[in-house]
Image (cartoon, rainbow, N blue to C red; front, side, top):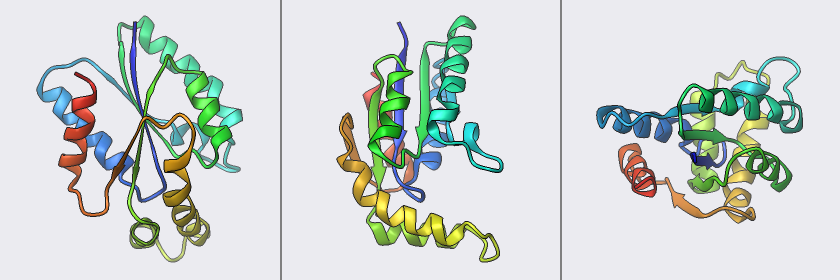
Length: 164
């Protein structure tokens, strides 16, 4: 039986940062786990839609299970309910946590980290604004954690408590 923690939220929501902190906590405790950022499955040009990479995720999780892993920590930027549904359907009963700041904080975080010269910057800033409000309302979200003024280690501690 595997355990899956799926962390969703907008760009700039703190998913990757919280995931790194949580993984470090588990490593310090010597808890075996696997870390997957699902965005990597779609990267490249053109970007792949969730429906085009979700079978890859299913295969990787299956291969990791065959290798003895049974705790999975995943992040995903589900842009719509349908995306989240596809991801959840390929996993074994994940706990879905949405990390989100306010729309303006998410947009500002993205604007601060992405170079002005990147052609996708404005779209990602706009997406961050939209998903900061929309993602917490997706069906199947078990818990919403606000990340506006919470340090990443505190967010990771909240996530760690879910794994006990």
